[in-house]
Image 1 (cartoon, rainbow, N blue to C red):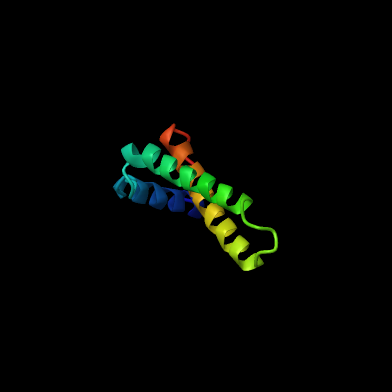
Image 2: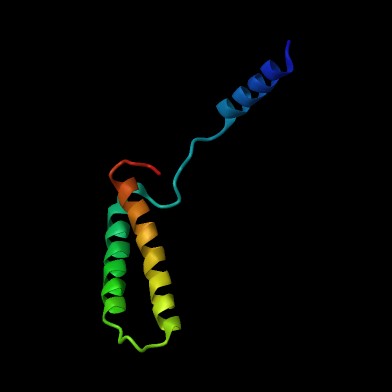
Length: 86
């Protein structure tokens, strides 16, 4: 038998023995998590847009970084809550 066939058989056997994937966050809580994260993102975006212009850039960067992280995770949670698993 070829080596590729043996590798395929070994991979198939380990796949059949493996336990199925279970998410660490319950799927039923994803819509609530998405809403909380996206609302926090929009609130931070509003805060970011109302900062005075001569402010220190580090404050703007820290708020923008937090808003970006919350928005990214919020969009992923929103997609997963409607069945688009990314």
